[in-house]
Length: 217
Length: 217
DNA sequence: GCAAATTAATGATTTATTCAAG
DNA sequence: CTTGAATAAATCATTAATTTGC
Image (cartoon, rainbow over the protein chains, first blue to last red):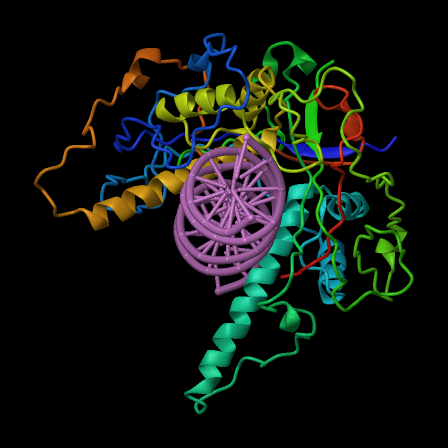
């Protein structure tokens, strides 16, 4: 049993090759790896044409001077059906409860279970849960920061923001600079789109399964 | 049938529990932290019965008399202990080829296909591919930045870098048949344990889903 | 020659930012 | 304006190559 999974598929975009040349790639100072006897030096069987996306992608985030960018060219094309998750009140409630309970970065199992539970209240997927925690955490943090900053200097004039009702209990001790190793891991999985479910009509998945977003950014 | 998927569960160290150990959740070695705090209303049903694989003993690999240990024949038991992916030369080759071909952020389908192909050369999973691109891209970027900064001037006597021999051959393979979307999205999926379906039956890998806890750092 | 100690690479996660839907 | 979604940057952790002392 088990093995329930949620998935979501979407499309991606490829960036065009920036012109960094990196001619000879192999300048690894440290030794080159050659573990396996390269019996298969021929990767030719791999047909990359299917992976390469000729059509230039918009560049992301103009980082760097060499970036000619100009990515904001939205040939807008909203995808029907698949839009973003819109949490119900109950879902939010549970999530906040968990957050308050100290949960910050649930692992895969947790996410799955949470999703399963929240599914009772409305459509939801694992990634939504994941992102919710990420965003909530980040935003609580910045809210706190902002507030502490604002209050630090410029005490007067107003105090619309309630300082902190937030229990900082958990995060305060997260930063032990000397913490030994404790790292987490998460389960990953990519799933085939299962295009065969219906012969060929899948190109256009409606549903959140394939939220095509137009290029942007 | 459709719906092929790969998954992976990584492992980690649980290390000390951050403070809230909450009640009697479990003493299981890898207890997920799961704060089912007191107020468990709906979420209480989370049972973490989990499936955590008890036998996490890093068993000297070996289970499979033959297969396994795809790369690296040396007695070095690298491997399986459930550690990180260690790409073979062929895999790297293909990945670099793709990178040079312009691929930067493959989407889920692409990742899956790449993974499938690379699986021929050794154990690999989707997330490895994903991370490889992320890291490679980021590191090329920083390498470039550093270099441009470092040797912006220093015109003379040097030509170690081949300016541009770059094949922008990307255009040659104008494949279009792709989805109209150009934005990024990725498939997500969390899956319950069930690890053994991965590539081969290297059944007992040490890697298992590992619970982690909310913040740890 | 080898194995511990060092170091360079790089795989894997987390955090910070950004973009845009509603 | 809020916040879901997605990526890039920063960081952490582990492995492989190199160095070093015997």
